Length: 325
Image (cartoon, rainbow, N blue to C red; front, top):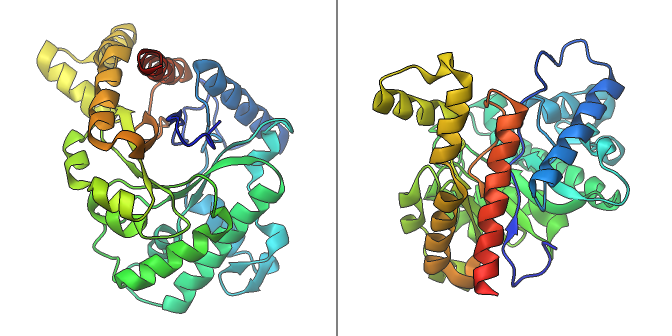
């Protein structure tokens, strides 16, 4: 479905709450994969068309633990092809494929080296990222690719030139040429740069919590680079949402979880999400390619609330399509 270019598809960013009372420490591999399998089923049942494998593990360590393992390396920070595997994809049924999110080379780099510039290491990390994508494609597990680069535009430690960043992103996304490949950003400041990367076809913007971000994206740039937009239509910043509601209502909703859930879902209703989608479509038209929640739902208090937010997204997208049919 995501390959139908005339249709806006619904995906999610990835992270998700663990089941109540469950902690990662102490889980066997099989127990962990069973939880991943269950969450993927929850996402599909909620209506997510290109679900991301649930990112329960730390977005840096789940890749760097493999990349830094001396037994897995071809050279420093370049993982051997046979070891560039994402464990969570083992839980994906053979008949299905998912949105595969890999932490981008810039994000991985600054987590290790900060503001010290070693361009050769950045390039090696980019090649490692590419190998994770390539292995996912070879396993027939990937319908949509995504580079997770939340620090671009926000972190002052990024001291590489634009050309060096473009080169790294191009290397990382090279296996994804010709398919839907997103970059997930938390700031629109690098959106134009990312649109210029041949392997990246969709630039993701958190436009539900920051609607003004869409004004910083130039549709002409998307057209000139033959790239597209992913617009967020559901807020996921639950701490900010609840703080606003607490001020408005004069109470602490975290002491009344049923009401917190009710207030959040009323604030983030299908009608509200549809209006956000309509505004994005009015501005970008056929350059709008994907939609869904702004970011992941790992900080949400329960799987049930996260699933219901995704279901509201699905209702909004379905309603939007029906009226355009």
